[in-house]
Image 1 (cartoon, rainbow, N blue to C red):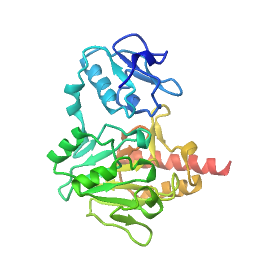
Image 2: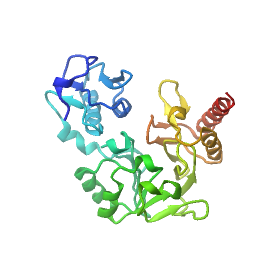
Image 3: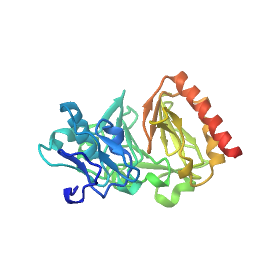
Length: 291
């Protein structure tokens, strides 16, 4: 729970505030950019909500915050807003909320599919999410993009008897995973799903393409809110920037509209713009490789 005695200095006066436990994960700024900004090492409230809708999304940010660093002094509507999660994005794809500090606040997603529901990376273990997942029909697969964002996948897997999918090179983070993917052992889960090995950020990084529309990108690819284009995190590339560039080229043969990352902004584009944005990103990455 956020502590007003530890409030960061940049907060403007009002009900909502951020305290010094913030890890600057960007969750609140993605959900409520009208209220939260980046101070460099943490977020802060630069503008208090001006209407009921802005108050609602600020409360969504409060609930999703992995470290409980956001507080609200009066008229806290969290009990009403909690049912916004999982949050429908498009079709049958949801953003889970309840980001986990174990994955540095990484985003996770839920797909309600007739062949069995999927969890992509893991949110914080939450009794609220458990009840919601139960109402949606449980979880059949938990797709883990890489070792950084496993979080509480084991607890969700045990409860729902779900099969965890991870690449062999990331297996140290989930040694008892039920489905292990590598170059010799791919996994097919129906025509709507494609798993693509995208080494770079880590050696075992993978992305998931769903219905040629939704690309769940882990820490491989995201939308840069400030620069307004698709981007990749060179400063957080733990394995190989050259391999990440090559992995990005693999995605040129994929069709997608939604970029749904673990870290960074999610974004819906047209399929044509996504292809163009990706092509331009690869050019920038190759230029960085030559430096």
